[in-house]
Length: 131
Image (tube, rainbow, N blue to C red; front, top):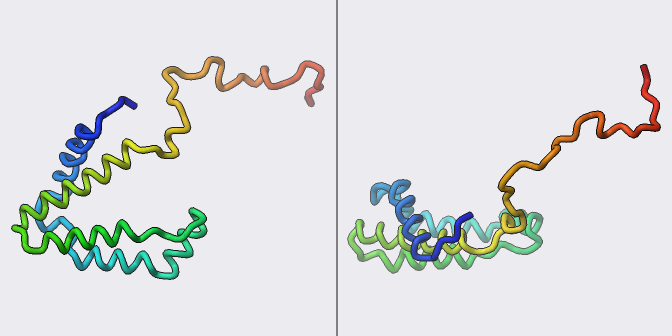
Protein backbone atom coordinates (compact mmCIF):
# COMPACT_ATOMS: atom_id res chain seq x y z
CA UNK A 1 0.00 0.00 0.00
CA UNK A 2 1.32 3.43 -0.90
CA UNK A 3 2.35 5.62 1.99
CA UNK A 4 -0.07 8.52 2.52
CA UNK A 5 0.35 11.41 4.93
CA UNK A 6 -2.36 12.22 7.47
CA UNK A 7 -3.76 15.34 5.77
CA UNK A 8 -4.12 13.54 2.43
CA UNK A 9 -5.85 10.62 4.15
CA UNK A 10 -8.23 13.02 5.93
CA UNK A 11 -9.10 14.73 2.64
CA UNK A 12 -9.75 11.35 1.00
CA UNK A 13 -11.97 10.29 3.88
CA UNK A 14 -13.86 13.62 3.83
CA UNK A 15 -14.51 13.23 0.11
CA UNK A 16 -15.85 9.72 0.66
CA UNK A 17 -18.02 10.71 3.64
CA UNK A 18 -19.53 13.64 1.72
CA UNK A 19 -20.69 11.13 -0.91
CA UNK A 20 -22.04 8.71 1.70
CA UNK A 21 -23.77 11.49 3.67
CA UNK A 22 -24.89 13.94 0.96
CA UNK A 23 -27.50 15.77 3.05
CA UNK A 24 -27.82 17.04 6.59
CA UNK A 25 -30.43 14.35 7.31
CA UNK A 26 -27.87 11.59 6.62
CA UNK A 27 -25.74 12.59 9.60
CA UNK A 28 -26.71 10.73 12.80
CA UNK A 29 -28.50 12.77 15.42
CA UNK A 30 -27.60 13.13 19.06
CA UNK A 31 -30.31 10.68 20.17
CA UNK A 32 -28.91 8.02 17.81
CA UNK A 33 -25.42 8.55 19.20
CA UNK A 34 -26.76 8.43 22.76
CA UNK A 35 -28.55 5.16 21.97
CA UNK A 36 -25.29 3.72 20.59
CA UNK A 37 -23.51 4.80 23.78
CA UNK A 38 -26.11 3.09 25.96
CA UNK A 39 -26.09 -0.01 23.72
CA UNK A 40 -22.36 -0.30 24.33
CA UNK A 41 -22.99 -0.83 28.06
CA UNK A 42 -25.58 -3.60 27.58
CA UNK A 43 -24.60 -6.96 29.08
CA UNK A 44 -24.83 -8.78 25.72
CA UNK A 45 -22.46 -6.32 24.05
CA UNK A 46 -19.97 -6.60 26.89
CA UNK A 47 -20.06 -10.42 26.84
CA UNK A 48 -19.57 -10.47 23.05
CA UNK A 49 -16.58 -8.14 23.39
CA UNK A 50 -15.15 -10.25 26.20
CA UNK A 51 -15.52 -13.39 24.10
CA UNK A 52 -14.11 -11.90 20.88
CA UNK A 53 -11.34 -9.66 22.19
CA UNK A 54 -10.70 -10.85 25.74
CA UNK A 55 -11.68 -7.52 27.29
CA UNK A 56 -14.74 -5.48 28.06
CA UNK A 57 -16.00 -3.11 25.38
CA UNK A 58 -14.57 0.41 25.45
CA UNK A 59 -17.47 2.87 25.34
CA UNK A 60 -15.48 6.07 25.73
CA UNK A 61 -15.42 6.78 22.00
CA UNK A 62 -19.21 6.56 21.80
CA UNK A 63 -19.50 8.90 24.79
CA UNK A 64 -17.17 11.40 23.12
CA UNK A 65 -19.22 11.19 19.90
CA UNK A 66 -22.37 12.03 21.87
CA UNK A 67 -20.68 14.92 23.68
CA UNK A 68 -19.35 16.25 20.37
CA UNK A 69 -22.85 16.10 18.90
CA UNK A 70 -24.24 18.03 21.86
CA UNK A 71 -21.56 20.70 21.39
CA UNK A 72 -22.83 21.22 17.82
CA UNK A 73 -26.44 21.64 18.89
CA UNK A 74 -26.65 25.38 18.22
CA UNK A 75 -24.81 25.35 14.88
CA UNK A 76 -26.44 25.70 11.48
CA UNK A 77 -27.28 22.19 10.13
CA UNK A 78 -24.82 22.46 7.23
CA UNK A 79 -22.02 23.55 9.58
CA UNK A 80 -22.93 20.67 11.89
CA UNK A 81 -22.68 18.23 8.96
CA UNK A 82 -19.28 19.64 7.95
CA UNK A 83 -17.95 19.38 11.52
CA UNK A 84 -19.27 15.83 11.89
CA UNK A 85 -17.74 14.77 8.55
CA UNK A 86 -14.39 16.31 9.51
CA UNK A 87 -14.39 14.48 12.86
CA UNK A 88 -15.29 11.12 11.27
CA UNK A 89 -12.72 11.65 8.49
CA UNK A 90 -9.99 12.25 11.08
CA UNK A 91 -11.04 9.11 12.96
CA UNK A 92 -11.03 6.97 9.79
CA UNK A 93 -7.71 8.43 8.61
CA UNK A 94 -6.03 7.65 11.94
CA UNK A 95 -7.48 4.16 11.85
CA UNK A 96 -6.41 3.62 8.24
CA UNK A 97 -2.85 4.82 8.83
CA UNK A 98 -2.45 3.05 12.17
CA UNK A 99 -1.42 -0.53 12.73
CA UNK A 100 -3.82 -3.33 12.01
CA UNK A 101 -3.78 -7.08 11.58
CA UNK A 102 -3.25 -6.50 7.86
CA UNK A 103 0.25 -5.17 8.59
CA UNK A 104 1.44 -8.69 9.36
CA UNK A 105 1.31 -9.78 5.73
CA UNK A 106 3.37 -8.46 2.84
CA UNK A 107 1.57 -8.34 -0.48
CA UNK A 108 3.25 -10.37 -3.19
CA UNK A 109 4.26 -8.60 -6.38
CA UNK A 110 4.08 -11.83 -8.41
CA UNK A 111 2.61 -15.31 -7.85
CA UNK A 112 4.68 -18.10 -6.35
CA UNK A 113 6.66 -20.17 -8.79
CA UNK A 114 5.55 -23.80 -9.22
CA UNK A 115 2.40 -23.27 -7.17
CA UNK A 116 0.19 -25.19 -6.81
CA UNK A 117 2.45 -28.24 -6.97
CA UNK A 118 1.60 -30.79 -9.57
CA UNK A 119 0.28 -34.16 -8.41
CA UNK A 120 3.47 -35.92 -9.42
CA UNK A 121 5.46 -33.66 -7.08
CA UNK A 122 3.49 -34.90 -4.06
CA UNK A 123 3.90 -38.64 -4.61
CA UNK A 124 7.13 -40.10 -3.16
CA UNK A 125 8.95 -42.47 -5.50
CA UNK A 126 9.00 -45.49 -3.15
CA UNK A 127 5.22 -45.50 -2.57
CA UNK A 128 3.16 -48.03 -4.50
CA UNK A 129 -0.03 -46.83 -6.12
CA UNK A 130 -3.22 -48.84 -6.29
CA UNK A 131 -4.28 -49.69 -9.81
